[in-house]
Every structure is written in C-alpha cells, then in structure tokens.
Image (cartoon, rainbow, N blue to C red):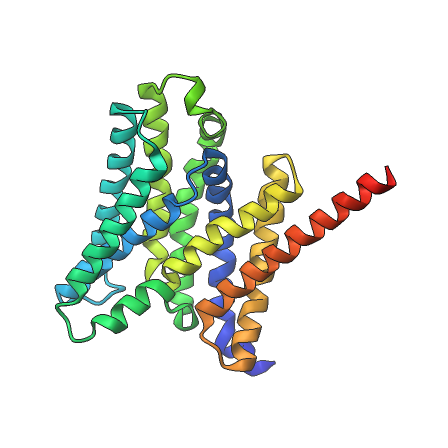
Length: 278
C-alpha cells in the first residue's frame, strides 16, 4: 500500500482535479451534440506540443504550452466563425476535418525527429504516471482560474447549450458564447495535454459526464455523479495499472469504457424490471 501511495498519489490527485472541471465541460459538450470537439481541441493542443518538439523545446516547457494555447485559440475562432458564416454546415463535419488535419500536421512536424514515434505515442497516451506534485498544483491553479469565471457565467452557457440550432437563428451573441466555451475548454485541455494525453482527456470529458446524465436530470446532480465516478474509476484504473504493471493512461481509459458499459447494462436491466413490475 505504501508503494502504491508513493507512485500513484500524484497521478490520482491529477485525475481528481481533471475530473472536477472536465465533467462540467463534458455535460455541456454532450448537450450541444458536439462530442468530438474534445478530440479536435486535444489534437490541436497536441499539435502545439509537436511544434515545440520540432523546435527543440521540452514538451512541458512554457513555450510548448504557449504554442498549444495558440493552437486552441485558433481552433475556437475557426469553429465559431464557420458556424456563424454558414450555420447550415454540419459542425460535427468541421470538427472532424480539423481533427484529421491537426493530427496529420502533427505527424508531419514530428516526423522530422528520430524520436517521432515516441513523441506521437506520448501525445496520445500522455504520461499521467510521471505527473509530479508540482504539476498537480500547477494544474489545480490553472483550473481554479478557469473555474471562477465559469461559475459566474454558467447560466448563460447553459442557455446556449440547451438551444437547438435547427430551430433558432444563430446570432452573434450565440457565437460569442460559443467562442467563450470553446476557448475555455481548449485552455483546460492545453494545460494538461502533456500529462494526460489525448485519449485520457477525451475519456475524462465524455464518460463521467455521460454517466451523470444517465443517472440524473439536473445539472448539479449530473456534475456530482460524473465527478464522483470520474474520481472512483480513475482510482480503480490506477490500482490495476500498478498491480499488473500495465501502461497507466490506456488502462484507465479501458476501465472507464468498461464501467460505462456496465452502467448502461444495469440501467437497461432496472428499466426493464420496472416496466415488468409496473
């Protein structure tokens, strides 16, 4: 137990911090019906780290973070402007195009280095096992700075997350709030892309939020349930990774996927029983 705490306490704390904010974003993402915005933004942030890598910077350096922030800012502007200028274009298709383009650019940029394969694998899987307490506190500080304004504007964000695009005109005010949402989501992703990687970030954004939505109708209930499940399932994944010497990030992702499958099966079973008894 002492060995586990020595090696896994900081990764567990990192997953806890990410679960708190990413569940909030994930609920909004699912309500907006743009699930793959997470992957696209994460890939843009990873493109920034790939540019830093090609320029000889450390992947967790200030320069790498700034390049990632620049990439997600560009993405936030692009997604907003495309939807504003032509709302008839499917936003999911634009998100998909940006994802594959950013991923391909990252491969092209990283391929110039002899350590290209290692770098690409790192951007996908992250290095959550090696996150330090300094990284955790940096992450906590950054997420706190994001959480404070998000708390103040949460009601306005909720208004536009609940609006069906096909039934109402896409106004400039709506576009502004979309941009704020995309930008804050991108900033949160850029801060932790080096430690968490694309796969774990996507998982923490979607599965806890989807679990909360499956169980509760209110936003508060969804956030609490999603955050709690995110912390719990992350812990289980870390324990399995430690005990069986498995790669940490991928193990946590697989455990999340299995847990969500179990939840869906349980909800389906309970619903069927209620119909029979009723």
